[in-house]
Length: 221
View 1 (cartoon, rainbow, N blue to C red):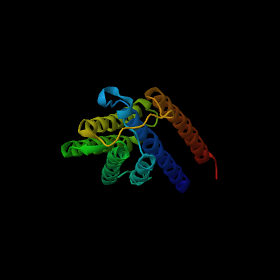
View 2: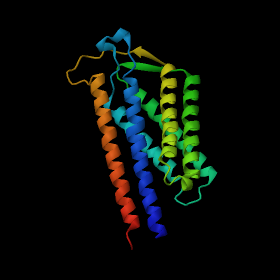
View 3: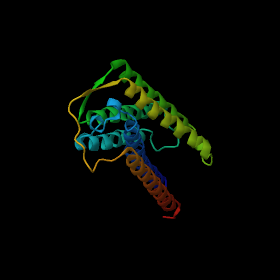
View 4: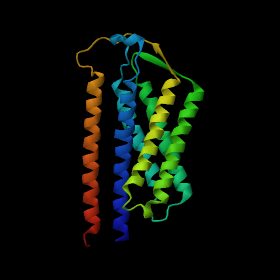
């Protein structure tokens, strides 16, 4: 039964890494970048993305967050050093996703101010360590406290958003070439609709997965 419980926790952590890295962080980045308006809003001067780097920026945080969450261990007693290590990896995943996503910009060269890079990394790391520390070290007392879990989620989301916007302030865009107008390009509103759809689908899948795992854990044998 103990082994089965640990397996359920591992599956939940894998799902969490996909949910946070592949949906929450990635979607927040590209919706946030839609708010960046260059050249007084001229369509041909707006940010365009390279498909390869964009795809890489989706999988990068998942691959880093997975060991970060697994570092929390599946035991009832979580060690502080594991939480700090996992939180640091999570912060680096958030920061790394942002800058890899920025490298995927096709029509501008991004110039990054080093102090802002350092500051954004520190925000992501401290927010991640703080949220994971509160959540994992106090999880035994939070079984039915949804608002405390929501508080951790808001802390982590604030760190992701804060890191993104600090990094954005420290980014300068130098035009490499005008983006040709294409009929297939997504507008800002269409991007938001796509992201909302992804988030809702993700929430449904995570809830379903969690319920199935909990039923498997509760079943005898």
